[in-house]
Length: 331
Ligand code: 5MM
Image (spheres, rainbow, N blue to C red):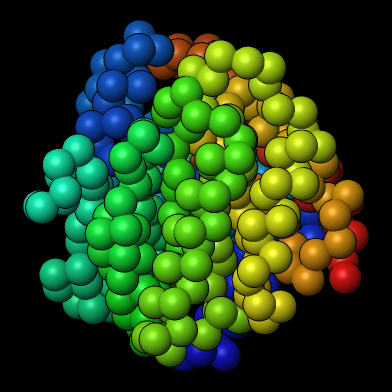
């Protein structure tokens, strides 16, 4: 199982390729469709995901697509189930297996990501359906008093248990500890919190015997909060701060694929480009959601006549990010 995970993790972070996060839960996807003027039906969610997956030459820049449970069980318009259809396009299908970040008992205002109950059985089912990898996201909000040690430890433990279960099922776990951009904090505070969260996650992965060569880390970039009142960080400052935090990860880690976290598509790409100037033992690439799909959703907005425009908007973002991911300097 573990050697299979290593091979898949290497494919996911292959030079010049990244991951498309199209795993919005039904609620999130529905509200994004509504904002774009599209009726939030299961069929429209399916059409939109098929539009993304069949964008021309997507597999040149995208190694894997993360779906949610609903999409994994749907079919392309020709009747082929999503996992098989995507595999035939040369892209690995992945599945979001957490069931969301919920209020954490004992820690008012903080969240714990749920989904561990029954997870091995669900992973076996997803593997049977054709999924090659999985994703679990923990969220941490920076305020004057959060994240607390309790929330960090609880979420890190859940990420470790999820990752161990994935590897036992032969699925590569994408491990996503996200320090949110919400707030007025500066870059230094984001760096300190991100470093503390990563340290806790590393501890749990180690205690649960997770093979780091068979996981992909999906972290936030280290930058100021979106309501920070001063000058925004430059790409070089963000890259320096982010890579300095990542250096605590061992060389055997298969790769790092960043989330975009609400940054504009252009800013996320510029920051990823600046990262590549740093020598690292692991590839640095993208696993963006909004920074890839927002322009596509806007361009399509449910109009069948704009289907190709939506695909072109996605391709433009994935090509730009794949081009910068290819600039990597390996150490
Ligand atoms: C695509 O959105 C993912 C699922 O979100 P919900 O479960 O809240 O609907 C999300 O986990 C996403 O994969 C990551 O946040 C990365 O996306 P961004 O937009 O931050 O790159």
